[in-house]
Length: 323
Image 1: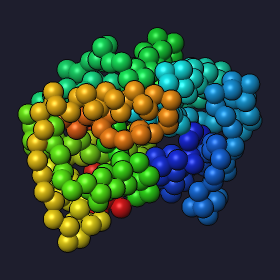
Image 2: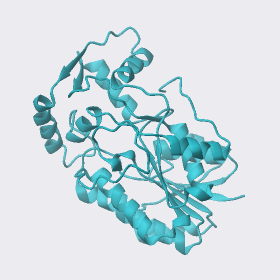
Image 3: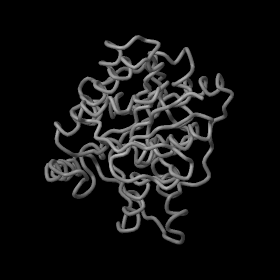
Image 4: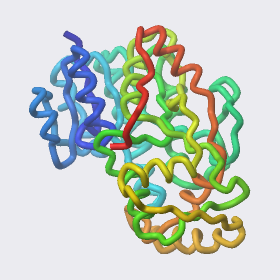
């Protein structure tokens, strides 16, 4: 039985990935910082409490033979200090990937983000047509880009791959879904910003499709050295997303929508970002990063993801709930 080390197994995506690989027949070891999800214990998944930012801790992870590393752990926020992201999303990646290579790991799978392409309008571009947006200033995509570049420059091509999910949702979501539901519940109006007026694509990626893509990236020969966008095939506009969430979580609530030009809201977003610069979460929405996310048409191709699923004999997971 092959062993998969999954970092960040105490978090949302990591815990789903740990359960997925355990059910797929792998021996799973997961790293956690504080809490251990009950479902991991129930599945017999070994957990190790560790701070991945401390390179001196890393040899502990390879006391057992590890065949694959799926690196999910990261700082994920639209605000925060640059140095926080550099430590968690760049230095820790370099240290862990180096240790994985030294211990003979077959492939290092890095969970990146589709935000490496930038936050502007897209029109169905594939990975071959997309490039890193070198102008990003937010530290989250900035250090994801630098980590991907470092992996490409320092690891053999066949021994790493990068998975770039869009907006992840699904079972156990503690981030985007509850944040949006709270907004819909408390705001008297649903605001759209900029020219799209809610008709722009909201790029949803169900966590099950993220897990399936991680699996394909881990074992397919053609995945070596490649990046793959994870995106559900169903095209959901931002307006549709709000209405679907309201129907599921706030039944009976009537949404009233209005549009605001970017010039009118950007000063508010800039102020929110400034006030939240030393926080883990925004003081209030929207931040500049969140504003650019909801105001653009993030419409990518998912052809590579679907091709990999086909190679694996998998089907795309189709959601019927945001829970």
